[in-house]
Length: 523
Ligand code: FAD
Ligand code: SIN
Image (cartoon, rainbow, N blue to C red; front, side, top):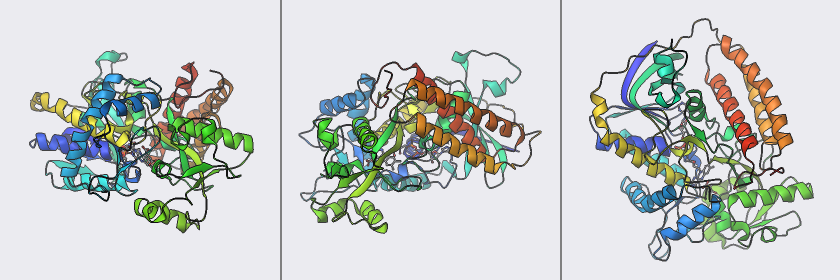
């Protein structure tokens, strides 16, 4: 067992965690910052982001227009003050990213090349080819390496937040309003030991939970750990029923995660067609293929249900192909690798779970309902997205909230002079080495199938009831294993996915009106 202390503990090394760490490290060079991350340090949803970052950059564009598009996409469930704040901060956060070394594509006259995506009424997507996320992740990691007060701990899996519940273990009831966070218990995957990390401030930046569905664009790390940990710690979680399905994941049965065909391809002019070669989006929305994601994903779902086909297609054959390859080299290479030449062939696509609009509820400074605990990025719910996120607003949100959290921590830096918190170490007594890996794997698959079959793009009361019954069985089975087995990342992830699935179903059952990404046949 070992006990370590950082002034600030950050969970997760995507755009949210890394940018928060950099901003704090630069402003407070005498504080110690630890970034705990469960896989390789660059493994994250961020790394796979394709389209880019939405920023008002063109002189003919306006904040008002980006604000309106964000509100329209979110079905007006967004927090307007937050929307205004994020969108007007965007140019400054982008300039900072460029100062840190990120490179974005230029057009022929030397301005940034601004792409278009669904729901945007102007070209405003700044991008690095079709691998914008990788460019950002590499830039941020390079900055982190040059800051001596940041320590990065890859292959360290955060198991649970340390709160008053652990510190004052004997207290049976405690006031939800009055919980504080003191760090996290972390499974060091190199030593297999559970370590205790105390901190004055903890930032949850563990990303989304796409892995709760069988078909997702999210990598395997996206298991909602931070949201589930915060839920167990009694933090306020909101909007979790608003799960965004991306309309155009490459259709490759049995392959998970699904490879994304960026919305920017449709923004570049690609058509969505059915097997008969008909464009069907204009029947549903006058913006056609560039309606917001919730609308396009539902239209595809409907098209597949009525035709009985397995997928629809992206038609790129009419596009300027030199320009296409220049903008989308990674997508083109992926298609060629499976025998699809987009210049001649249609690209088969289907919707796949992509993004969590909800999560840990935070205020404009990124503060959660738990004292000394912040959240940012996809794990958080800021109010920016409402019922459905506008394309390319996620990387932006993470950068803006990383900045805001750093500001808040700087203003409250007196806390770093306090005594280090004293907390008990993790109690692993009575557990044995895991013998149940096959059961864990089986339960994860079962859970993903339940969610994909019953809690997907179109829900209903009956489907949600069925889902809950089946999830209950998986939950009890998992808890049986948890009581006896030594903790493993796989077991923790399964427990976290159980919590996320349960929350989505429960919150879906409460919602009585179809809004944005939430659609029930009974509303
Ligand atoms: P992530 O980048 O997912 O990082 C989370 C980090 O937390 C990871 O390092 C992970 O390993 C770590 N972690 C998780 N659990 C634990 C744990 N228990 N212990 C320790 N560490 C943990 N958005 C846009 O705005 N524009 C785009 O073009 C775009 N394209 C996308 C394309 C794809 C294929 C995908 C999947 C998403 C895309 N998104 C895009 C969404 C966007 O990439 C994500 O929402 C954003 O990157 C989330 O950043 P984050 O830092 O919050 O989380
Ligand atoms: C994409 O490139 O289509 C993804 C953009 C996003 O998720 O915002």
